[in-house]
Length: 333
Ligand code: TYM
Image 1 (tube, rainbow, N blue to C red):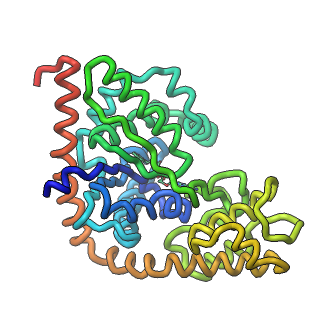
Image 2 (cartoon, rainbow, N blue to C red):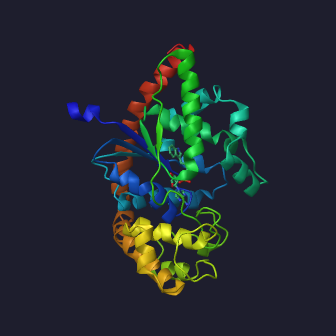
Image 3 (cartoon, rainbow, N blue to C red):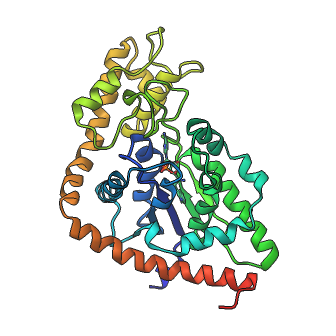
């Protein structure tokens, strides 16, 4: 028990806004699973974040349960970690309001994800899209997290979280732990298979650009076979070879092979062989996850039991931090 208390706290979350991608898995979820033994891990489905973009209510409910089952299938172990649903824990929305009064318009304006998303959803640039990083900062700070395992695209959001926390602590004393991002060496930025200058994303316009965790093997193979490469026909990691670099990064992430080893193994072979090898390695990585997903999704009562239990613990932990912060500000509790 004493040992338990000394473990550092890990917090991370994922938006359940569609089926989970290979990018999510390699950039973040794999680390979530690995960190469970060494750290006190707290994970969430960030469903409040998803409504910054319009959602279909029926589909949204399905996505949330699908994502919960998918993460259990990836190896999130509810005996070891707390895995809850953000909207079930009201402290998140409250903390977001509190912190928004300690966040500057200017710093939110500089967020690249806001700029990207507002360009993509030009007809719905809502205030939530703008203040989204504050909600995320609250998620992390509520649990006094030491480490936040994320892909490279979230780096700027971790940075603003640290800035908000430091500003608040500067005014009121040591209220929040200053968290650090934890970004993997391999797979931190998986790119679209159709446009390797853009990150692989659930909302990719070209369906062939994004591999989903639950794609059937033949679909995965087809997507890799159609992946954009170049005309050099040489498997090597080099500037200007974005497509091949991306395939090498994926292959390295799932097999553990170094780039040198991959270059050596595919010396003299064409891209066709290489794409097949990458596709097969991904299929094998995802196969056990897909099998487990099918078991979990068919037992909704079990899923509910898991998240209700976790929601309650998350509420208890986060209420302590929220209370502390509100007291410092001057609220009568
Ligand atoms: P989200 O839902 O977009 O992605 C979940 C995680 O997957 C990583 N990721 C990727 N990694 C590598 N390559 C890619 N192509 C790729 N696409 C996504 C993301 O970096 C992320 O780690 N705002 C967050 C969710 C969130 C959160 C938090 C995260 C809400 N509150 C608190 C950490 C802590 C998001 O939209 O992630």
